[in-house]
Each structure stands twice: as C-alpha cells, then as structure tokens.
Length: 503
Image 1: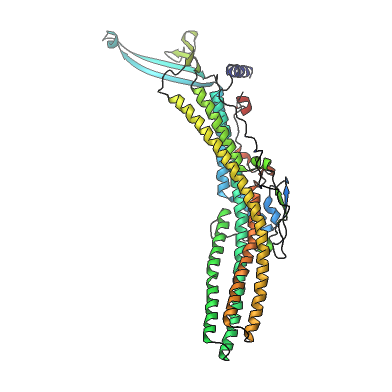
Image 2: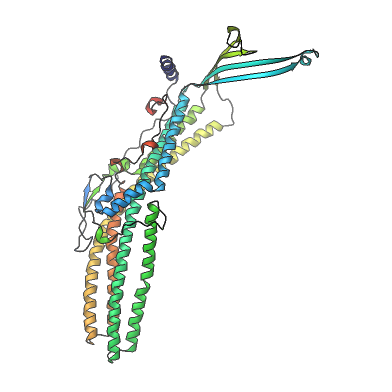
C-alpha cells in the first residue's frame, strides 16, 4: 500500500494544472421576474365546488410530494404504485447508473495500467536461412513478463475528460428528476381529466333527462292542441343532438383510463381501481411560489442544461490538451528461456523502460478545428441554457396568469350556470302556460346545457393549472431522493473523487 500511495503521489505530482476554462455555474438572472409588477396576493373566489380563493406565497417551500396537497388518498396510492412500476423511471435509473459507471471507468486513466503475459512457443528452424541447408533444430521458447504503461496527465486532458463525463452524469441525474416530475404531473392531470369527463358525462345525462321530460310536455301539449307538430320535432332534434355529445365524452374517458394504466406500467386491460370525481379532490388554497433567484436551482430542465454546459466547457479543455505534447512511460520485466526448467534464473531475465513525448507537427488542421468545434459546442450549450431559463420563467408566469384567469372564469361560469338554470325553469313554466313560443324554450335549454358543461370544465381547469404550477416550480425534488442506491454505482478501490482529479 505504501508503494501504491507513493506511485499515486508521483503520478499526481507529475500531472500539471488542467488546461482550458474552469467551469462556474451561471449566476441567477438578477433582473428576471414573473410579472412586470408585484405578484398578486390571491385569486378570485366563488361559492361553488373548486371555487375557493388561492393565495400566493413568494419564497415558500414546495413539498416533495406535492400531489398530496389535493388530499386524495386514491391519487396518492396510484402515484406510489406508478413510482414503483413505470418503465420510463426504470430506464432513467439505468441511464444514470451507466453514466456513473462511465465516470468510474474514466478515472482509471489517471493510474498506471499493468498486464501480465505468458507465451510458450515451440518452433522448428531451418539452417537454409543462414546458408546452412543441412542444419535444422527444434526449439522451445517460453516468455513471461509484466508490462506497465502510464500516460502522465501533464496538461489535464484526462481530468477534463473525467470532468465532462461527470457533468454528463449530472445531466442524467436531472433527466431522471424530470422523468419523475413528468410522470407525477401527467398522473395528476389525467386524474383531473377523468374527473372532468365524469362530471361532463353526468351533466350531459342530467340534461338528457331534463330534455326527455320536456319532450313529454311538448308531446302532451301537441295532443291537446296547444303546440305544433314542429315543436315536437324540434324538441326531439334537441334531445338527439344532446345524446350525440355523450359518446365522444365516453370515448375520451376510456382513453384517459388507458393513459392512467400506461402511466402505471400496465396494459389497457389492467385498469386502476381508483375512480376520480371532482368532488374527491380538494383545491390547494396556499400556493408556494419560488423566488426567481431560486428557480434556476430547482427546475430539473435548467439543472440538466447547466450540466450540459459544464460538459461542453470540459470538452474545450480536452481539445486544447490534445494539441499539446503527449507523454508516455512504459516498462517491462520478465523472463525468456528455452524451457520451463531454467525460466526464472538470473540469466533469463529481461526488462526495459522507456519514456516518450509525442507532439503533432502536421495534421492538416484536424486538432485546431476540433478545438474550434468544442468552443462552438460550448457557445451552443450556453445559448441553450439561457433559452431553457427564459422558457422556465415563461412557464411559471403562464401558470400564474392561468390560475388567476381560471378563478375569474369559474366565478363567471358559476353565475352563468345559475342564471341559465333559473332562466330555463322560468321558460319551462311559461311554456306550460302558453306564455312563450317553443323557440324561446329551446334557446333556454341550449344555454343551460352549454353553461353546465362550461362550469365543469372551469372547475377542472383550476385543479389542472394548480398541478401545472407545481410542475413549473420544479416539483420539490430537492426534498426527496429519487435516485436509487443502485444508480450511483460502485467506484473501484483506486477510484478518486472528481474534485481530486481536477486542479
């Protein structure tokens, strides 16, 4: 162990500082905000399901299991099942494990490599090669040796390569977090979509029942001479048209259930037992809103873009180091004899040691253009990082606007539905008394039908956009550990940390 430590110390001592740029994470944008003015304190409210006011809390922390804020035990259980069975998560864990193992493999280049060889050989020679055609002999040659080679990382090319691979592993780690966030968000949105469709289907069935009852009224009035045949036909057409809107809703519901099964890692015939209704979900009232300076450290896509930028920076150092002299040290020690019996005697010992320096003199500009390509790749990664940050801020701003708009829309839709219901009740009474024409009643029916469907959709939008806000803020992954221990991998006993490999 002492010799190994000494060898490692000499190796690291020979290695100089790594050439190329030292990476520093981009600073959070100082002038960025979600609004041109102050963030609103709360949304509007209305006295209907999902109509409560929502309050924005700048700088408050988002829980790692944000979906529990909807207070739905079936939803919590379904997400827990998906986190253990979704194949996309398994693939992301494996990709991270691969990336980490590549880092450990690359670290081996910082150490000497040694191999042992053993080659027994039986040869018959002819003296004709030496001008003695009558001479011949059969020989045995046995060679055993240990070969050692080492490439001192004088300019840090190897360390920059390790740095690049480590950054790529970070990229995979945040790709994994993004996969978790996408899965949980899709599950919540699909559950809300199912609840919305069930609400719309129930509303449509209620309207069909109402229109069927009204058809009976019109039919009786026609039989008594108080209504025209055209009124009966018109009511039948209205009823048929409403019934025709039911199959598309049922189709969407079936497809949503199929989507939930797929997200759970199941086949379509293995539907989840949970059934979601809007009444089974609670709208979160208190909404944490990350400070703009925090968003860049919380969004997985921004962190992945930062890791890609880091890898591109390290690759510039690799390209620069490749233009500089390359050093090698090789050594061999062994034995070569005509047989096994005297193989390890002093007279059969062989050894060699050599050092070399290689500097490219002419390569038609290959290394120069590779360096320029690496610089261009870094510029590209920097632009992509900034684009990712801008889109992330836009994403948060859009969801904040949507939440306020949803609250206002729900309040308007609630009023519209109540007004349409009262108008329809009045129109039905007046029609029975013969005070209005059928067309007035038909208009009231259509208005109420649309208002009822719009109300359900407006209620669902508040749940869906609340989930979108939690997703836009990063999903609170920093409060939980999504990386399985197996995805970390196991470094060799000679492996060293990245910080030790860098200068």
